[in-house]
Length: 364
Image (tube, rainbow, N blue to C red):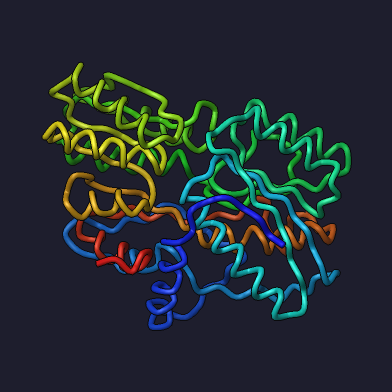
């Protein structure tokens, strides 16, 4: 039986609401692989892509599994609603396999705070427990990638998933998730620069030290800022994917730079922390950031946050289970699945917030 830690209540309600929406939407898309990158709902009107930003309409592909039972181990960076949303996609795939007479069980575990040391310990313990596949959302590229190589060399089937792949050249078999984190960071920062007329002081809240997605988002942001002479980065801080720490860091930055023009937030937690601080200070600082936290979407609706890049967590979870089954059967990337299964990110604005709140949370 699967086990995981997290807060799923709101997402269960979201799933039911989303099914009602998707039943009236377009025809199902192929869930195995997409070639999507960053899409954008332009300010001033709700783009059709907003409604499909999270695709709840999935069916298993025709692949016939070789066994009637699979057991997987998945570990991710930290207990957080973002990974609860990934879990819902996993559950849907699990149910569909059961309808075919195939039982998929899995452990889905993470620490309360992101830690490469904790992830190392979990992976070493899982190595000797005879799982069909071990899946990893990489906590720290430099620390975890060599360990994944070690696991593969010992005969363990290893994949990566979520928004953080291993380092280039790692022996992991395949990755399912966001392959364009750098581009996401650049896209959000470009929107901020345009909003500020390409002049202003900005701060960057990164997230967890060494987390590939957080570092790539920040790198995309920095490279974009560097293109414009009128833009200046005055602070870069790591909030360790903590709302409370992001809030405290933002207050400190605003105290030091009361004329701060913008904040670029590189995970799902820090847009919330930054928005709380900006609201408390009565600041006009423009915030851009990642993902679909319910509170962040309300701040977007109220205009405190300017735009958010929403990743399709549901598709990540669904495709992770499908590809884990194929890997367990001894398949390699090729005709059945790619080495990297890319999932979409959609940049949304104030005009899009109500639709996203309804889609994900049944919240008007």
